[in-house]
Length: 194
Length: 235
Image (tube, one colour):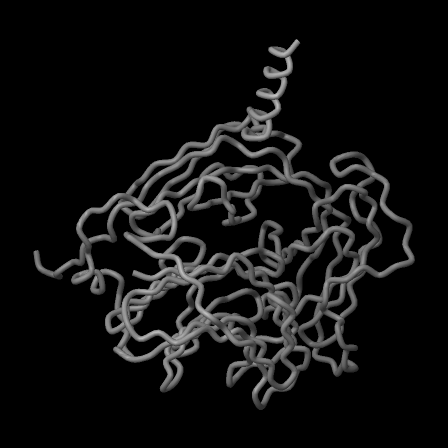
């Protein structure tokens, strides 16, 4: 996986001028859709609708409370959601993943103090995921080209994407170096494709 | 009579569609690059404890808070924005007095293992319900206590004196910093919360504030352009 700078990335991606889309973000036309999902509760993970909890401080094993959405393998996909961390005695908890069926691809995680980072590479994505504040996440994934992550409207992370099959996940998931407890509330989750 | 009823209904509808705005504050926005918006505002309510600056990409929201800002701050830059997207901005004051501060110095322990749920925001019953209006006299939380629960953990408790708060702000000022900052936003009626600290917070001052938001400023909108063109590295 190669991390690209924003300027390098846009070289082949500038699109013809189109009317500004009020929503979703970036140029369209986008089509809203509702992928199916399954709920994953493992270890001390607990899911209650859109509230995701890790109730233990276990620093090993599979501890997860997530939604796993349907697999896609082509086109451009956009995810939008809002998360609020209401409690974080633990640290290094993955909140949102764009997962490749053959292994992890992009994982947005939080550590104490509200630093958001990319698990693979460790880049700081943003700060300010303060307990109790709502943070907006948009990801735009052009399969076989690029994956962009916007935090509160600002482009914070860009990574090249291979072709393949992917799916979105969100919730609370203990990373290899992390541990709970953690409570995360998600809202306003929407998907588009083009 | 019927005309009056229609007029009254129209006024009600207008009132619902256009929420009250804060006339004291005037927000302005400039697109200073294709994907950077600079915000400035004039005027302020001297009684405000601070402001929140918010954005949305749809006119009706939802609005997301970009930051809790001190009352003297009058500008904010929202950088590296989503291209070809319309951003809506507004500013809202918040009100409420803070408790007396407590200073905390963390040690190395050992500390007994804290009980489960010690860090969860919660309402511990037993105190008298708050009866004061936020912004009025005597509405600030009282009796703030801080108990070190682990080498990097503090359990806070306080008494809620307000009856109409929209929440509580836990604020800290690590040693060497000039100002307090918001470290947690908690729901109404909460009177206990545990914070896991950062290394810079080994010595810090803490306070808690019951708060309410005031009316929003005018809304300003800007539509971003394309992402910046790549540079070739050549002159």
